[in-house]
Length: 248
Length: 248
DNA sequence: ATCCAATGGATCGTTACCAGACCATTAGAC
DNA sequence: GTCTAATGGTCTGGTAACGATCCATTGGAT
Image 1 (tube, chains in turn cyan, orange, red, yellow):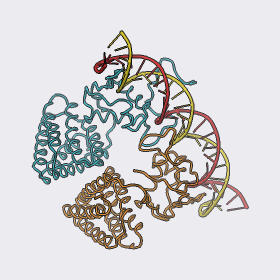
Image 2 (cartoon, protein in one colour):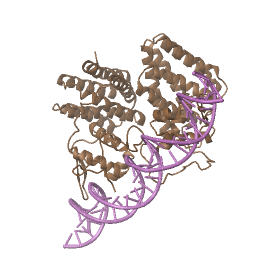
Image 3 (cartoon, chains in turn brown, yellow, green, purple):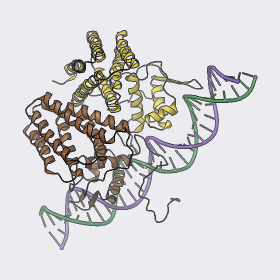
């Protein structure tokens, strides 16, 4: 059948240029699927040790065929990010966090756009949530996400995930699908930038303090203060990133 | 999201459920391409009479093969939205605005999300632009977009396009790609909702007055006022839509 | 009158992706 | 011990979308 297969090279599905019929919408579906899975892990949707949904279900969620999803999962398995077990009560489990892609070049426009859009989204989300009446469950989830951030002062990776979870929690409390998905996408872009700069404990502690204040403003129904604090928080990250990454 | 199925389709290569290998990313590429073209026309990127980019270029813009783009263009041609002429200095031209899809059911969640996200985006955009120093060209473009809205009191369709152009102009002046594309997408969703409700001249005039005030606030560099006016403007539309469309 | 460059129009071979069916494995229920 | 349901693993056939190439048409430039 195939005449171009070389012995010894297992040809791991795909990597570089995709010569043949490569499909639409921002690269091919295979890479999109990998990116989607990595993003979910990086943003703390699935923590280390968690079980991913069953392949058939996960494929439906990502709107991709099971075959393509499996290709992507095998790639992640090869990279050591997940492992799979067969049988009932089996599944695919997250084993470790993906390592950051520090190789890629930084587009100066990307930094500007990501960081400014994040400011817009998170300021709005904080204000909106502060204007709402939260259910007891929601209050518990929010405070839990906040305190979780404080429990880890070990690695940058761990903190990044919990930090993302906290901010996405606020976005989710707006119950606005558009805002939630935009926040997730933007958060992931900001995270990719944060991976390029050193991890500074002082900043982390300051961030945690700000988180606490934001939660307080939300729970005391003070929209203006919540928005203002969220803006300050985002601007802190913005200055940090610009300082380290922006070309002079 | 995307619904562009028309009755009386002569046999346009494809129609309802796409039995075979249908590809990822929110439906198939073919329908996505049609939706993208319709959106550009509805949002005033290409006005009636304008020439679309050459097929090869347009295909690259939409990130789609020329073959698929042509399928979509033929569909639009059949529907009478565009016409094509061969030869040098030929091209594909917009002949009329697409008619609204009033058949589709209204998802109550869709109304809520679109309208609230629009408030977030447009309020932020107005504030950001008001904080900037605009170039003379930008000032001219903004005021032109504003006055254009006042020139047409004929049809709802025409006003809708010019109104969209005005608001997208503000978004574009932020120079934030994310915000621009989010605004365009959201604007199109809101437009689809506006197509379901009666066209009220009084409201249009009021909208135009508000546009004028927003431009004034932007040009006088008054971010708070610009944001406040944009919020009022969006809330006006929100109440109108909720009043007509929300289930009791 | 001829040429030319830019455009729409048509065809061909390749492949990425899909749907669905089936197999293999496993832990708990009975 | 056997059964069962849920899961990962494998295979097959079909097709939508792709890149590439060539053709057909046109209005201006030469």
